[in-house]
Length: 168
Image 1 (tube, one colour):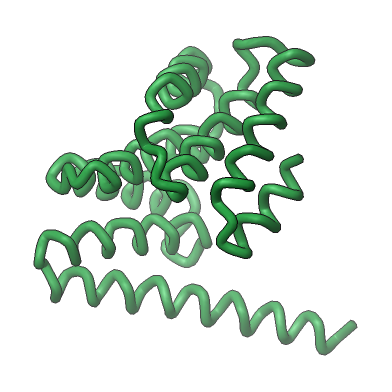
Image 2 (image 1 turned 180 degrees about the vertical axis):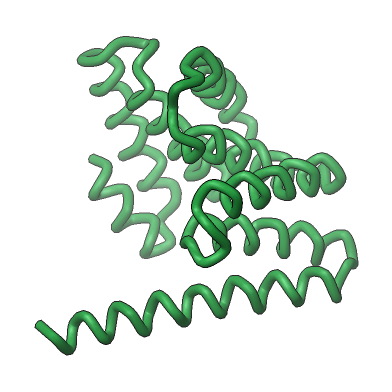
């Protein structure tokens, strides 16, 4: 179901994608239990899909449950906490709570950049999320710098992929 959801999301089919993720979460919860960090990550993915589908009102329970599980496991890598911050940023953005969204996006960008480096795809995505919020808040200069940072990282990643594929 996760792979199907990824494909559906890439095609802009967010309703179908969220339904696929919801099925995956239900199956994983049944197999692994409510306190599983794997289930928590999947619930964060569900929050993102529901938000993209305009169903932010359905995210609170999933986000709260996932955040609780992740908070009870301090040994988890930073990517788990970044996932919670990103999901919160996206839901706050969808609700047009721009000040709160900006704070969450800034924290997510700081966390991902310090944990993985500025050139990591997660840091690039965090920069894009913050740029979108800053655009809504009419902070164009700051947003532009973050859009450029995102695009530079994506360009580097694509160049690496093309280079690797040429060797194959």
